[in-house]
Image (cartoon, rainbow, N blue to C red; front, side):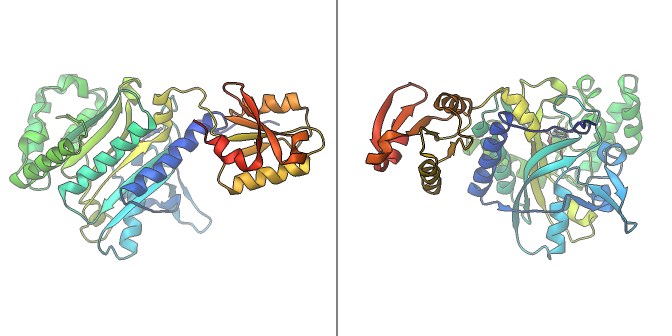
Length: 408
Ligand code: AMP
């Protein structure tokens, strides 16, 4: 019998996993630099957390959740996204003060699988909870941008909009409804349905949106406080040198979203899957989860799509040294590897007793920057150091290894 990974899921093995490891390490670094602490939540929650927190009536909740009854008869769901869980956890812990939380991990949605649209996919994200300040929105937008730039995503742009709040949105939605009524003939069936229940979600429809470029924009219908908030987000981003494009028809079609909505787009990805991440302000979410009103803003980035956007087939493994054992020096080589690893270098070696030639091949295959040959010179406390890029080699003492690794 042979098994395959479930439909819509992927194994990530070397060498592709070199890229994943780089992205995950960079994520821990960048999120910590901006002051976001690690938050871990369960991979599954009571179904209601997502039904409310992602929103009844959304595609994710209606069609895509992995929901099942556990042996205790509770309805549980594998998380389709991270925000609802983080907000649930914050409320459960008392929701005091401010939480700047960063998470990363797999999410699950029953999608029709294709490139960049998987049933298990990996997100990294942050939630900035407890602040209404425009500076929090700008910080969040900036962090995602800096991370994606550091990751090397080509053709990156930040698209940004404000969708108003509970004060100004109702009047806008009425105006939008009137416009959409006049365009009924171009709307798909889903959009016609949404026109009755929640017209803003029509702008979310990938099929209809391109035909609705004349639709009124929420950003043109903001009340004074929302307009001031939006203006401050934009000026702060300009000061922080984060390039952005105003995207008048970018919306989050759910009531708990307020004000800032944004997306990170990698123009090199195909149109349907061009978003490598998205986020926004969701000041109404905590209340929907049964808590007090806790403002929040955050984003989630899709690592599977980032990897696709990078388009790298094979990224080098950042191995500093491969130790080649010549003759009967296995024990010494193992000891040397241990010392160098403890000193902070990335080191590997062969333990199969293969020929020197085979070990050099392995060193190349592993993408090591250099090789140390433990052979006859060992008796004088020396090894042969070979630069695997240039092919240059020299005999160095063990004390010189660190300096040799750091050679320019
Ligand atoms: P969302 O939580 O739907 O706002 O998605 C945030 C980001 O996660 C998107 O911009 C994508 O990069 C990624 N993403 C969402 N759904 C999937 C999926 N099914 N497969 C791969 N990536 C996804």
